Image (cartoon, rainbow, N blue to C red; front, side, top):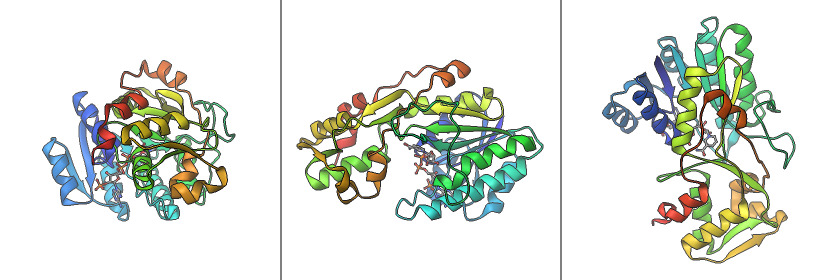
Amino acid sequence: MRVFVTGASGWIGSAAVDELLAASHEVVGLARSDASAASLDAKGVEVRRGDLDDLESIRVGAAGADAVLHLANKHDFDNPAVSNKAERDAVQAIGDVLAGSGRPFLLASGVASPKQGQMLTENDKSPFHGPEAPRGGSENLALEYVDRGVNTVSVRFAPTVHGDGDHGFIAALVGIARDKGVAAFVGDGTNRWPAIHRSDAARVICLGLEKAPAGTLLHAISEEGVSTREIAEAIGRGLNVPVTSVAPEDTLEHFGWIGRFFALDAPASSALTQELLGWAPTGPTLIQDLDAGSYFHA
Ligand SMILES: NC(=O)c1ccc[n+]([C@@H]2O[C@H](COP(=O)([O-])OP(=O)(O)OC[C@H]3O[C@@H](n4cnc5c(N)ncnc54)[C@H](OP(=O)(O)O)[C@@H]3O)[C@@H](O)[C@H]2O)c1
């Protein structure tokens, strides 16, 4: 397949592109900068210059492809409305182009249980609808295109897609622990985060594009729930700083924006994804990755 990939230069996107190329797919990658364009070009990816703020560049990329993989995100966590609007607008632009084509449209999403502590499965619909919702309600918007002849597949990534070079949530938590001289968890630290190694996430994406029927929700999750206390303890070991609890009411003061996520108890399963795709995780666990040390290089 000729796959148009937004976010092709990103953490997950660059691994997904490698996986797609290894599976003999042709990749066209959206790049918004010279540096991103050069990194894609070096891999043999056809570069399409563009930006989430230039929807025409996304429409043209989608129109010329057999499948679209949408991973770009502004990730403005201090001002989520900006990211959410860009995400929703991009999904709408791609959906409108693909309508009636039956072509795969795989987009990134996250795990969000309607009920704290309840194991989220692929059968659970997202509670987020409309532009004001987290991620602009983009998963449900994309699924609306199934009735308009789009093979929409949503991949819900674990809140940590970890590995060597990760600059996501775990790297942010390490930075906070380094700055504060203490590795913290919230309350008793029994709340859980699912996790997946980046190599496994890339595999789920590639298999999802190849195999998943329209309307499928995939869970890119290897570990259903790692306790945040275990995460803080591994960060404490890595930085050689004490590990401590932060009271729930002090979460945002201690952690800033990421406290909203780190306080969540969001276990999620991938049993149905593994069965559908014939996939089983093979990468290291989150704690193995933390203990391997790459998160703690200065
Ligand atoms: N990583 C995780 O743990 C995780 C967990 C759950 C969900 N997700 C979701 O998975 C998707 C991929 O995440 P990621 O970790 O790979 O993100 P990332 O490393 O931050 O990469 C983001 C990508 O989006 C591109 N981008 C940012 N702003 C753009 C703009 N204005 N126009 C065009 N492209 C733009 C970036 O391009 P440049 O390279 O030029 O900056 C980069 O390719 C996102 O939707 C994310 O929210 C990720």
